[in-house]
Amino acid sequence: MKSIARDAEEILLASDMIHLGARLQVLQAETSLSYDRLARLYHEIRHCSPPKGMLPFSVDWFMTWLPNIHSSVFYNIYRFMDAHTPAKKSRALIESYRLYLEQAKAGHLAAPANEPVLSFTRAWMLVRFFDSGMVQLSRCTQCTGEFVAHAHDPQTHFVCAICRPPPRAGKTRKRAPAHPVSSTHSIS
Image (cartoon, rainbow, N blue to C red; front, side, top):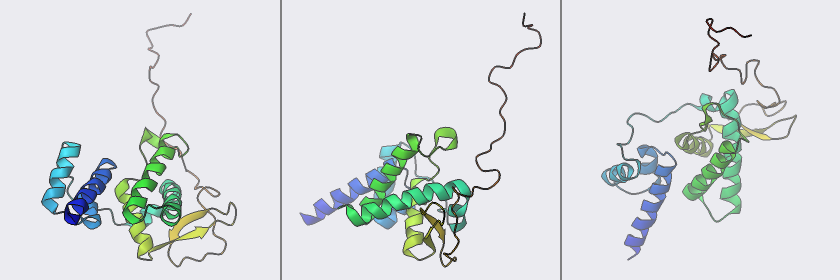
């Protein structure tokens, strides 16, 4: 009976992660379900085969301007959820990512193309990077917020990407007007 309940719980956990965009490797690491079962579940929910290829494995991605801001917001939510709610580990990750998405979609974390900057898989990788000691939170000396930084970086005089954005932060290529004025039409 316990095995059936555990399987049902793991299927629900995997389903929640698939809905949020988790890759198959994440599902395998977070559940004890077989690869074949996870692949079938993924296909049933997403109506396509799971993507192939390696997971993103670069700590440096989290240090660039916009990803750093989004990753820092997410990780602070995750830390709070894991410490102060009944949701732990995988459940805390799921609930934290949902809260992050709510903030991103509400416009509080403006992102180009209306897509979240931080994917579920990258959020999962970030938690693993923290668990393995590859990254740390550093407190900004200006705003006192805590931001993702390389592990063992000096903590003194740290200034975050919000307080000191790079020179071209947020700038995109100029787009052509949606309806250019034709040279054959004259304005009277």
